[in-house]
Image (cartoon, rainbow, N blue to C red; front, side, top):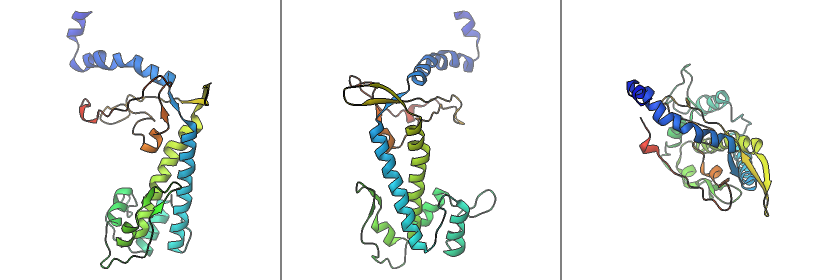
Length: 231
């Protein structure tokens, strides 16, 4: 067997020596999932939905009209046809971009003479700052700061809170409360670089707060190996 291994091409040898040895670990992860604090996740979801509703109301009042904020077409018409924002980038179809990178550049355009119109920061239910008043007062297009905050919270709600809260399964009960587990998968071809991916990769801080160790007798350590990935 050892002699046969030596004859293999380097890439196949790598699969056997590294990837194959990880299979049992990945199988355990997918089988057991992770323990989650459902109370924390539900509170976070409620706060996110509160933020979405509040930001939507503020944006509609500023525009003096209703706008489907998840529609790139409607947002694009408002920004470029009505507000006459400069076109900094276009999509593959030639339409002015409403992507986050473009919106951040537009939000960074300053007024020639900033005025203090907004007196307070925009905050969530727990007084965490969503949009700073200074950013709104200094920007030529303050509404774009609100659109960006709404876009971030919309992704947080749909891609993380909804999925994890909906798909978590109630497990054993402790003396304090029922434990929930979220089951996920690992995709071996999840990225063009060959890096593995899963629904639990790149979790935002709000979601990480709801992930628990397997029991009160265990520690959960979050490590970042971004700089030592095999490339």
